[in-house]
Length: 350
Ligand code: SAH
Image (cartoon, rainbow, N blue to C red; front, side, top):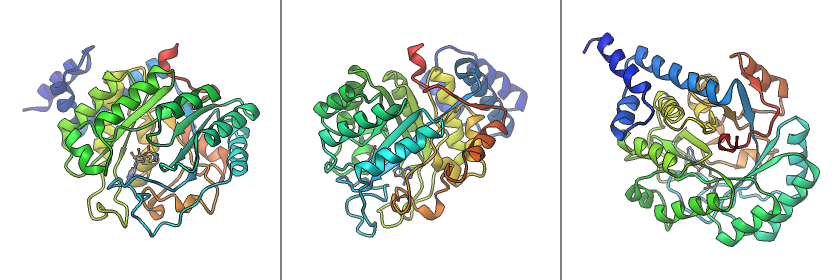
């Protein structure tokens, strides 16, 4: 097939309103540079239409790395005895949240392993205290918890919940996880949405066994769930896990998936993930130009930060806001975008 023919076919698909699984597989499978450029340009145009040039910052606090789960890919899995475990004290967490808010960041992400030591009341206390002190939105990323807890935390003031489905392939889901099931994960996502959370989900690109068709299904699942944020980042092998010798996900495929999400879902927040920046030079900037409109700088204080080893810290290139907020702003402005001054609620709320 000559290039011209491919571009004609590509342009025709890109202008569609609705996309079939075959269309999505076609877009994800684009190989030549020119076609990929066209795909990214289309995603960038739709991003501009729905999000303008604003980039939303979400300040992440990884407050506990204890975890009850045994996900095959994750360095924090229960069976990994090499990781020194920590829990931040509530006052440390609240102080860190204030530091984030003082930098003019309007979303705080509270993330941890699945750690039931932080029970319903403790998390409610954290949400209530942070909301009392700072004018911010709160995103929880605590793994699967009970429906009662989700409800209590919503009442305490939580705004958003990030729970990635990881894979829409039920068979793969059960291979990657010990006891957890995809059907349960989906029930949780639906419940969170039903009780008024803005919900984030997503997958990892390049997990063992994954095919392009699986990624297409992941994108269609995000559409079906009507999620508010889609986080698609590359898998990075973590030492002392069963997948330590597997290959990392591919950066271009990750960028293509992000672009396709923007084109298919349109009014959705898309982060350019830390994992992408880790495996690809200027990964964040490339992500922001391929459909993304969100960055999630890490504010976890030391010594905890180095112990939150979802994937190895030696390769983790956190966008370190403690170095200077200016540097982060510079990276955003260097590509003609600006840091948003709003909380960056779901695009579906406007
Ligand atoms: N325990 C919570 C939050 C922490 S994990 C939860 O499970 O939701 C946050 C995300 O890190 C996961 O959703 C997963 O997509 C990602 N992750 C885990 N291991 C990873 C790895 N090895 N490489 C890249 N991303 C990984």
